[in-house]
Amino acid sequence: MSENVNSTRFPAPVDTALRTAGWQPGRWDIQSAERWADTLRAYASPGGHLHAIFPAAVEAWAEFGGLRIAAPGPGRQTAPPLVRLDPIAGIHLARTLADLGRALGTEVAPLGAEGEDQAVLAIDAEGRVYSVDHTGDWYLGPSIDHALTSLLLGLPAHRLTTP
Image: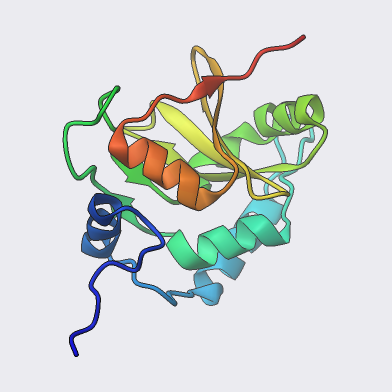
């Protein structure tokens, strides 16, 4: 019997894009994740803001960190960006991410970037994923799986608003 190429965790086009970028089920690079955590812990913004480090972020970095994922097609509703999962992309946004976390009532850590740094991706302590760009803050989904699917398939994000 042949092995199913699609992990069923992701839609087939997303699974293919992830595998092309170097991901596979069970990928776990904890050494890189720990290096990123150490680098972020050592950084303080000019105003003294520090990065939050928590298990959901470290787990996402260990599984997906270092990947540059190209979209599998033109996108359903938006043009999908190149997704670069590298938490150091958000190293200079300690204050911005702390402010977002405060507004959401949780901690937020950098996850990566969209496109050529048009937006920074972030993850909260519950594993929810956000995008922060010059137009505002966007909710990408309740998990990294959902966020990657939305980004790579060109599904719309939801703007975060204040009540």
